[in-house]
Structure formats: structure tokens, C-alpha cells
Length: 209
Image (tube, rainbow, N blue to C red; front, side):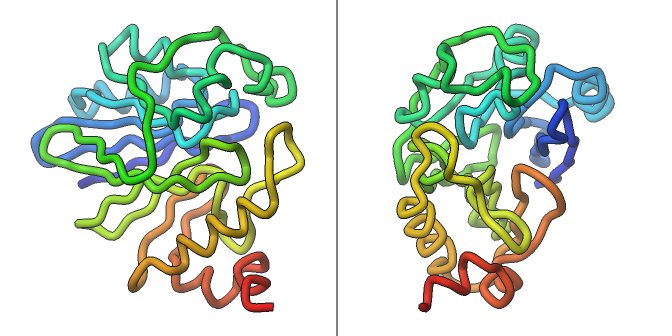
């Protein structure tokens, strides 16, 4: 599976385009319906089947509806973050986003799988930043798309509406309990690895105290 990163929107939110060997694709967190996203999809002849949202904040979801209109792809979000897609909970003003409400096509739960072409991702519910935050795990390639749960050296904020520090710490504990090392693609800034975060991440280091 090929992974392409596009920082989009006012907050440079990482949008990821995942393309399997068969050309089927998924887009993780299209925070903006941007020309560079459309150009990449066209350049790679990617057939987008899934739009995967890690959580419901506007800087991660504002491009989802327009991308669905273009591709016919299925929008997926955890059930607990479904209210964010048509309410002020998405924090569009705070994120500097132009946002039009929409309804998701599929509401996810912990342990679900989502497939596009021959590729499959596993859903890990990781609340804290929002109640319905998730990470998408590609077990075959040992890759995690962590949204705003886990970043390089830090973790997601919990001072927004419906955030929970206690939930976030439990979610981080679930992530570091995954066996072995994984590549981590977060919602902002640069990628990292799970082993590196086990050793150096401020929040993860506090789990043992």
C-alpha cells in the first residue's frame, strides 16, 4: 500500500491518500476539498472507495462531503463523533474552516474493519481528543493513522468541548500495548514510530508514573 501525505487547510492538517496495488484508494481526513488533493487522485488514477475520518473536528472533515460527491466514496466516522458532522461541535470557526454539514454513510465501532479494494484497515477506538476518535491500523504494513490522538513527542488536546484527558491516557495505553513497532502517521506535523514514542513521548512516559 502506498501512502501520500498532503497538509491541507488553515491548520495544515495531514490528509492521507492510501492506494493499494489494484488502484483502489481511501482518503483519511480530507480537511479541505483542495486542488492538490484532486490533482494527486487524478495523477495516480486512484479510485476512491472510502473516506475515513479519525474524528469530527472541522479541520479533518471539511472536504469529506465534496469528495464524496466527486467520487461516490463512503464516508466513515465513529458513531460517537457522528454529531460533529452537522453541529457546532466540529469547531469550524475555531479551525478557520468553511464547513457544510453532512451525514456519514457508515458509523464505526471499535474493532470494525474497513476495506478498499484488496486492502483492509482495523478500527481502534481512541477517545480523548473527541469521544469518537479512532486510529486506523493497517496490520499487514504495521501502519497507524492516529488522527489527533498521538503525535510525534506529544498527544491530542483535551480542552475542547467533549474532550477527556483520562480517556486520552487510556487510549495512549492501548496504542503502546500494540505488539512490536509501527509507523505512525498523525493528524498534524511529521510521522513517527510507536517505538520512538514509547521512549520519548511526554504523555506516554507519564503512563508509568
